[in-house]
Picture 1 (spheres, rainbow, N blue to C red):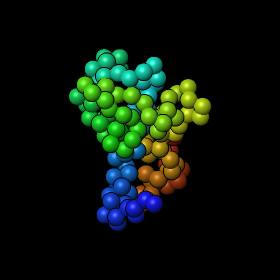
Picture 2: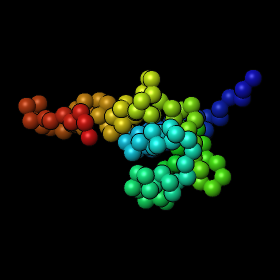
Picture 3: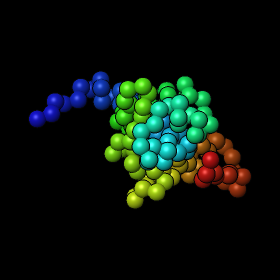
Length: 129
């Protein structure tokens, strides 16, 4: 029998949801899961392959490891988990495109216009970032 999640922890997860989805979106955009398809890699290897700042990439990977998306081993060695598999572009099914779209704020067309007083004829909706 599993213990109930304390209200504080449940609310905390809800509050940080945007951060988590943004981190998942960033990983999807840069193709981290695709790079790890062949096996575990260090952040140094990933940063070189992706032409990114290693420290920034390491922070992203640690954030995603904290929610189970990736696994970190000894020496900053990261590998896939079942949660990261659908972020691969060739996964069947793949959620990579969805992860990129949702965190980009395009999941609700026109939501950035809510509360603005622009005529409908002048509104432009961006579906892709």
